Length: 436
Image 1 (cartoon, helix red, strand yellow):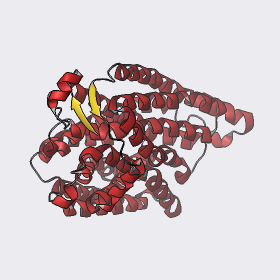
Image 2 (image 1 turned 90 degrees about the vertical axis):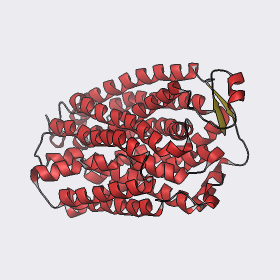
Image 3 (image 1 turned 90 degrees about the horizontal axis):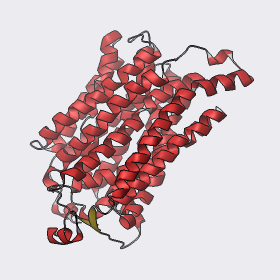
C-alpha cells in the first residue's frame, strides 16, 4: 500500500508514490493521540487485576487471565485488522477500531450486573480487539510519515505518548477503582450477599469505562470526518495470510518473537506491581497506595522514550536495544534478591528499560517492508499475544513457588533473548532482506 499525504487528490498525485509525510504534522498529532488512548486503556488492566483478584478470590494465575483474555485479541484480530487496512485504508480502519473499543467499554455494564468473572473477560477481549485494530493502523502509519532512516526514532517518540497514557490512567484508576480496596473480605460472603457485593464494588469500574466509551465515540467521529485525509493506493494482490511468509526472513521472524517476549515480560511485571508492593518484604503498601505507584513503572517508559527518540537518531538501534535489555535483567536480579525499598523501586525502574524496546524491535523487524508494511504490522501485532501467555505463566510460577520474587525469573529470560536480538540486528539489514 502506498500513501500520499495531502489535503486533496491533486496534491497527492504530485507527491509521488511513497508516504513521505514531512509536511503533515497534523497527521502525526492524530497518530500520537491514538497511541495515548490505547496505551492508557491497556494500562488500566494493572489496576483492575488486583480488584478482580480480591472480588472473586482468585489466585495469581487466575487473576492474570485478565491479560490472557485481553491479549488473546491480538492473536485473533491482528491479521483481519491488516486486511481491513488494505481494503478500507488507515483512517477508516482507525474509526472502526475506536468504535469496537467503545463497544468493549459498554460491555462492562452487563459484566457488572452479572457479577461474573467470565463476562468481564469477554468485555476485555472485545475492548482489546478494538485496540488491536487501532495499533495495526498506528504503528506502520507513524513509521511511514517521514524518512525511513529515522523510523525507529519517530516510532519511539510516538510510543512516548503511549507511555503518557499508561502513566496517567493507572493513577486515576487507582483512586477511582481501588479506593475501597479490601474494605470487606469477599471470602466471608456467599450466595446473594456475595453477588450483591461484587455488583456494588464493580460499579466504579463500570462508571470508569462508560466515561471512556463516551470519549471514544467522540474521537471516532473526528477520525471518520477526516477519513479522506490520506490518498491511499490500495494493494489487494494475494491473500492477507501470505503476510506470515514474512516470518521466513530471520530479521523479521526473530523480531516478531521478541515482540512476543517483550510484551509478555512488560505486562507480567506491570500486572504484579500492586501485589508485589503490598508485600511486607517490599514496601508494605495498601492496595490504593500500591496502585498509585504503577505510574512510576509506566512513567519510566515515558521518560525513556522521549530520551530514546534522540539517542536512536544517532546510535545503532540494535546496540541501544541490547543495552536496555541488559539493564532490565540487572534490575530484575536486584529486585528478586533484595527486600524493602530497594526491591520495590528496582522493579518499578524496569519501566525505564522497557521504554524503547517495542518501537525499536518493531522498526528493526520491519526494515525494508515497503508496501507490505501493513501486513508486517499485522503479523507483529499478532505477536503481542505474548501478553496473554507470559503473565499467567509468571503467575503459575508465583503460585507454585510461593514467591513473587522467584516468578521474575521468566521475564528475565525474555529480556535475555531480546538482548541477543539487539546484538544480531545491530547492523542494517542485508540487501536481500530489504527487498519489498
